[in-house]
Image (cartoon, rainbow, N blue to C red):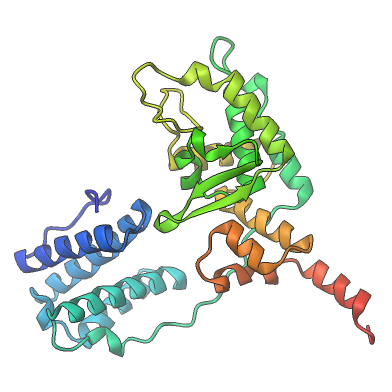
Length: 316
């Protein structure tokens, strides 16, 4: 696990040692992505810091009451149920690992119940709103003497919607992973799992125009681009946070509120299902390990459900 981006607490030596070994386990044996490693590290740090406050300086002294007190504190802070559930999932993984290693005789996390999680229906853009967003990048937004970054931004938005890319996957996409002859991109997602996703004609055209008309002006001789497709002004691969900023920027120009990269991904999945795509196919395109994660999109397109029922049900 890389050094945490958050302010890691100062822990008693026994807890700090366990934290370091657990971090190495997640990084080396589980192969988690950098973002997941950061989330796990942050959750474990909060837990261990709270245990230290309670006077618990070794994992062998933790009991279920300590863990329940920690969960209660998280709830009192006003965290969303999904965030509390994520903390709880981290705690369960952490203590299963400790028990498997023999660091604790019994697992106190076994007494914790997973809270019922309300599945929030993701925000989805209509096809008209998607068209407005994709049309937002324009030459007028660029400096007269600078590279045509609007070509990059349009290609990025087109590809995110056409292929359902996560923000982190945009920056990680390499030139060799754009397979133009097949019209697909090879995407490396969570857990370094790869999937092939079609691009679609508009995205292919926008990407080709950016690669020919903008990217060469961003490349530096020192190879800092690392062969990635989407580059920043400095010639480095575009970062996840910048992708978020650009999506929000163009959403504002298009007059859309509450739009972020995952909304484009949600819209990609919902529009596919609304057009008749099989749920298993959408699962593969999104890179979901569990189809239950994909099934949330079946609750979104209510209008299509009503129309299908009205058309095919004999008593409709």
